[in-house]
Image (cartoon, rainbow, N blue to C red; front, side, top):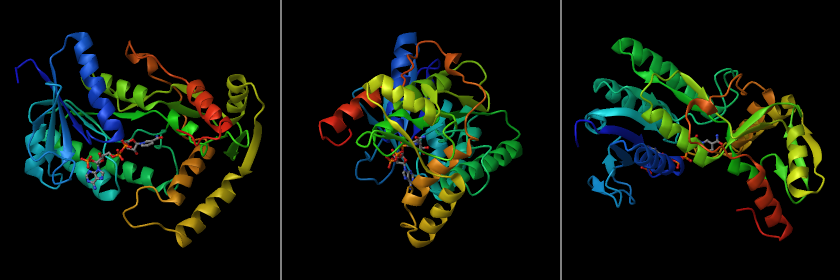
Length: 326
Ligand SMILES: NC(=O)c1ccc[n+]([C@@H]2O[C@H](COP(=O)([O-])OP(=O)(O)OC[C@H]3O[C@@H](n4cnc5c(N)ncnc54)[C@H](OP(=O)(O)O)[C@@H]3O)[C@@H](O)[C@H]2O)c1
């Protein structure tokens, strides 16, 4: 590693988002002619993980097996880093436990910036209890405040809020029912929501990681924002057919259904996304508290923002042809 090389650590480098963030970091570094080394962390001992740091086909990417329970090991992989990006997924042990240890390791090495694995709508104004997984992320934010304060450090702690991943709109379960030709929503047809592709989210995250300027506590992006009522218009415009606007139930009733689901079908203790938690996304969206006042899309040049049309078109065509959504 040369002295001028910028080291970016990506925790969860073989996950859905982590892989894309690694690719985006390498692509942006190449384009800028910047010397960057991406240290992609994977869990030690997983069958897919290499047993030692492995050079990949890409010399600027090193996949590094790490023991997330070991402070020493975390300090080892954070040495010399400019930014640590977490794309980890999990429950309290990961989101609060592992991320707290990783933040402490980053601080021990004077890492400039830490990006937590938030990647959602802005959950900071939601009432506690609205969403189990968002509560865990807020618990980590509180823990991070204490860690940063106690260390008396200036590390930039920057969350990225991109709303829902646009690709979810092609599932047939989120907002659009392509078979029934319906836009199904909870609460109000005028609650604004943000949607961003995995790719755009990864590109923006990479740009934040490499940013030579100070980054703020929160950054907000969206490939497209729309309410359910606007989604109905978009669906018609993209497919040429009418979509009905269907209110599935009011927010208060959805809250009650989720409580029952949680009681009768709690899921496995280690399950990140049992059905009642998945339903909490709809509930939080319907509360209308997650939509940001500003967007930071223009902060970095070179990102081509993708809207929702392509996903809708593809999913509609698949439904027409009797195929399940991609
Ligand atoms: N807003 C949205 O619509 C939306 C949708 C999906 C995800 N997200 C968010 O995006 C972020 C990344 O999600 P993703 O789908 O990319 O995650 P993922 O692929 O499911 O998991 C990311 C990584 O987390 C690591 N991990 C899982 N359990 C762990 C444990 N017990 N201990 C240590 N590491 C563990 C795994 O690392 P190894 O590979 O090394 O085992 C995995 O590769 C998360 O914050 C997630 O909540 C948002």
